[in-house]
Length: 319
Image 1 (cartoon, rainbow, N blue to C red):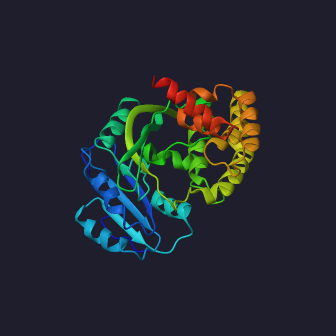
Image 2: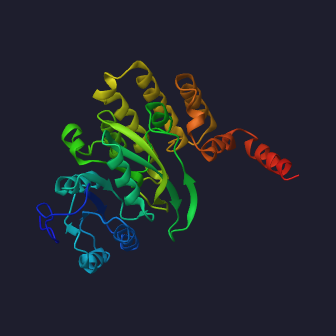
Image 3: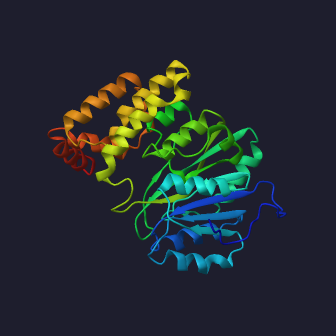
């Protein structure tokens, strides 16, 4: 493994908390420059930026060489076994106090790092920070903003642990307690967040920290929904932490399996959605409070006559 860039582990840095950003990447030449620009333009400079490339052949390497002008950048490029392998390499190389994992097609917004570092500095018992996120298109235009209600188990399982990697930061010391990303799960990030949250105090930072890019062909595109669904159900059933959790937490976790239908349904039929939403409501009726309105409206569209009903409501509201 050849790593390009300076080893900062022994250098002196005048900062209370050092922030490491891990960027897994593979053939993202169209977006990685925007990602790196959003990192290096922050008002609080990152301690280190570790790009783990999976052997790209699309011009990514040339872009990384250009960004070597930033002393905090370290990067390597070699064949890997997928996202979990890439992230785990980056986590093992990281030496900062805090860690953020950023996809090579997403971006951070202005002053994200300063808000995160300030939050950790003012709340030393907190080990996990979740910020809000904006959905952006291929050109970086904002499509929507997702604001979370909190980071309690009730809120997080109501959204099936589908929280934005790009707006999550955690203390590196926690890795020694929970381990690394588990490649056995397609949603290995969701499993990692859940394990982290069983071992630390978490806080919601009410600020839009990042832009989460959505476009065709992504790892979470519709053709992958069946695998995401099956692996999430298995993840919940195999969790050692959940097995010994309080009964309410276990119940919300069971509900979260059914609630995955709001995001990654492997079956588009009304019957399938209705059955799982009923099961979810029986286990966790408060889930409606924590999910965005657009996700619930999409379910109404599946009801026979639902589309016509929504159009009628819109016309009535415009009167």
